[in-house]
Image (cartoon, rainbow, N blue to C red; front, side):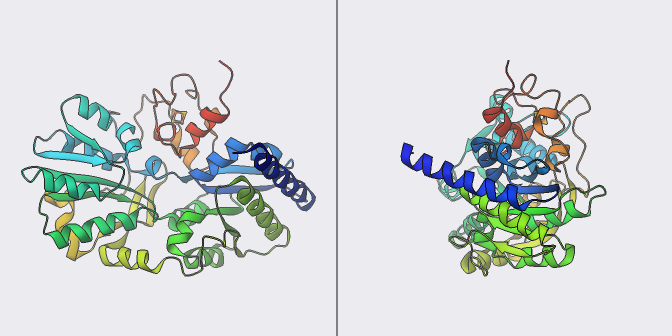
Length: 370
Ligand code: SF4
């Protein structure tokens, strides 16, 4: 980035921060849902420009962090089977599973065939290249990546592939926001919603959330000016006592979203209740395959149990407080292991593994002095 552009951004951010200070007449607690926004806030020090009393807490918007330990345990179980090639995105390979705390990289070291993909469609090439093996794709992510998994399955079906399945761990954001608001002791008074999810899903679900819970929501992006402008809009709505939905990311998000992506989701997935790691069961918080695609369900193909209603607790011996962090009830530096026992090189929990995790953001941009 050129120095001139940097200075222009800093100037605009400072201008918005001044407007924010002039607008906020009392304390407010706001949550940015998306891990990408958390990283932008920490990277640009936006939280340090806020007026006193305006508190930002970080939400559960990191799909790697909220993938249930049971799904990871299922992937670990499959990864060591000789007939299976287990593949997923890079961050998932380092996320610890349930009580034993193992990860997929460990399974690979133990002889499992675990491979890293950068696109789900690579699983098709893998299945075609290895017809004698069973390729299992651990599919994670929000509504942003779920359409690509749906496309993978549509193509696999069209090609008649019988050696490809998915271990489904896609999650839906709006139901998790609703669940947070219903938690006893909830502190969230307004949300910044993730622009990339809005680009796919549109704004209808968020509108329902606003009407049902009477909490303002502003959809925004990931650049510092986007985040600051959205914070200002959110505080304006709160100060005016107007629980409304605002779209501060109109250059990307349309009210109706992406129709083609939504049609793919509808063709392949049905909405189900799903456990989120750190949050527990979320009504309507995930997807399952519809009957026409159930042959591609790895749980059925390999006779593994479906996700239980309640996820198992974190291992008793672990100091990890990622559940509290994902609920916005603690910040990463509150964790006794932050930056000492837990680092990106030796993570104890998913928020330190993931490139979108809050612990990784604090470690990268606001690490305590050694
Ligand atoms: S710093 Fe590490 S141990 Fe602590 S909450 Fe974050 S991921 Fe868990």
